[in-house]
Length: 283
Image 1 (tube, rainbow, N blue to C red):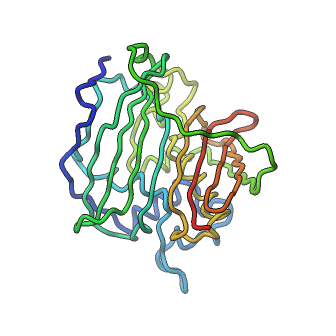
Image 2: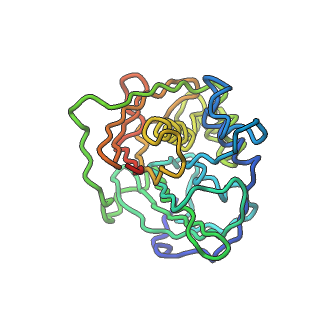
Image 3: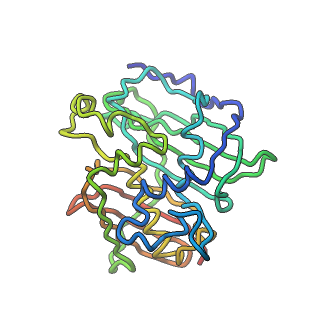
């Protein structure tokens, strides 16, 4: 397993991508929309309900180019995928995502950081429309177990402290036992989330839920609790994945709102699974 530090700063050429109504609907179901009550969230789960205009969940930003064949990618070395975990994720929306569209995607390797027990590679993906106007920006942090200790820089950290006052919102969301099998159809086919043999090689008793699936669940909770379900009010969110989630577990997200800034933390039982959460919304 060898990290490629020479790749830092490299960017792909803009690649043309597209998405459509069906992909947005499938993604919404994959992150639990309509699961508790099929008659709610119809704007995200249906395209032909009377009086309801289809919309796109903001966290669909992470999947815009996921199913485009042979999409160029900036790589950070020869990595054993069983050692790879999603460490952190951030999205920023410059406008609501259209139900269908075409765009240009560019990917840049921001840096590779030494975490001691592993390495963290940060990769930024920008999607514009065909005229070059930004739609979304995403920063993905991949944690590579066993690749640390090379004496590299530490990860830049923003200040984040758990508020001491009671949360303004506490949302409970149960995931399905087959949640990972649904979510993977949106484009993330990593076998860690469906292949028991691969999961065992990675040290897990069963396939784990995609970090970005949990991210989508929590993004829905933030959208409804802090934006009144208005996608135009949702500007962005970021989070660190601290422990894996198993399909069927219940996510409990506590949110603290101050103006247009939200801090949040998500637990399964007493264990923190999504930490250092922040979101920006229209106040």
